[in-house]
Length: 177
Picture 1 (cartoon, helix red, strand yellow):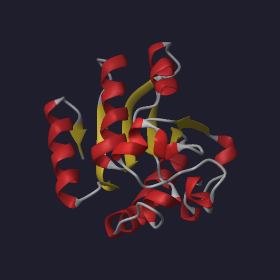
Picture 2 (cartoon, rainbow, N blue to C red):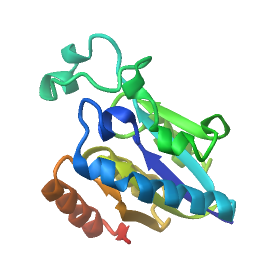
Picture 3 (cartoon, rainbow, N blue to C red):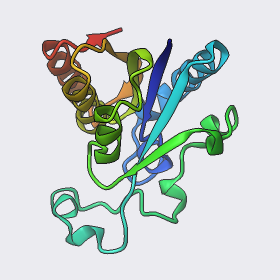
């Protein structure tokens, strides 16, 4: 059996681009270290990428968050260079998602693609939007699977919303480590 690490939206636009924050920049070394730990142990790693297209501002999300970001084909859509320096992303499953939670990841969880793992840990951005959404999908589709959040490998839109999201996930029996 193995562990599964889900690296959520560690994309340039969320780190130092259109929606970047100081806190997002600060977690990059922790995220890289966590990825390297999983690689060294031979555990599974998957990635999600927030993915939008031309006309984003006309979508429901775009109307509520009117900042173009993670537009497919732009530099901001790419996983950050620090991660690409330590692993070859072509060797890993990358879920492109058009909303907060990955519907394809949910289908894979439900169909048993990850039934050979002992636990799931999520890291990445943003704790209060996409990390919490994907963590809840894990708990929904794999009800008996231990799910963890590595808090020092996550950042929220604000430090307060990060803490609120951690508390909400803890209430849903997701372990904060």
